[in-house]
Image (tube, rainbow, N blue to C red; front, side):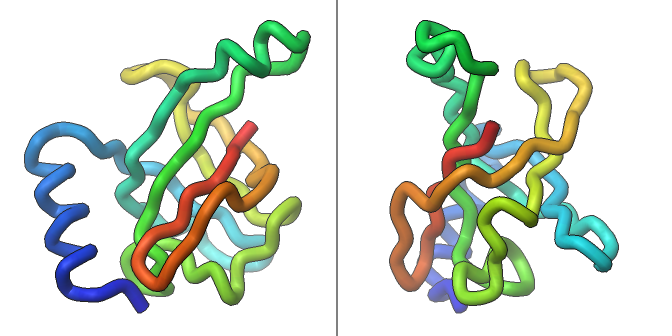
Length: 109
């Protein structure tokens, strides 16, 4: 469960327009809207001939983010747009880049 400080930090990012609402999709459950900080720096993947990827940071929390302990990498998905303002599409969670008690950073493609 993310700390109150981390939740306040995410709220600050949201007020500054630095987050986007994405959908977290778990098989057999309804999609859940969460706030994410998205880095669309997918040029590395593009140069390797792969689809552009993105890195997303969310709270490590079952109610307002994604719980790392129950997340299923490879099966769970994130619905996000390739470009700001674009149409959101479901993308697979490829791997966990980093995590701590408050935050979870994921490679999504």
